[in-house]
Length: 105
Image: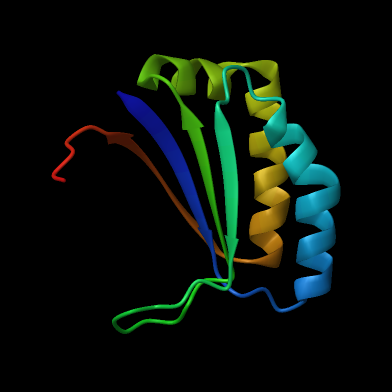
């Protein structure tokens, strides 16, 4: 069962500063998370029904929920979380953890 961490960033007041911080600091930290299988970024997603669109959506994927939890408990996970606090000062963020389980097609 695949485990995912999803972060949805709202539009920052200063997109250049956010992009710099995300790509120069946060992305290199997060890429070192143990067991990380995939890391995807979507820019300027379009809201289908209501609400403001997000600026950036990041999806990080592990093979199991235990691996995801271990990654965030690691020194690399603590470093990425500390930097996420700096990013949140630049753009509000919502995040969630989920498992990909049931396939309906």
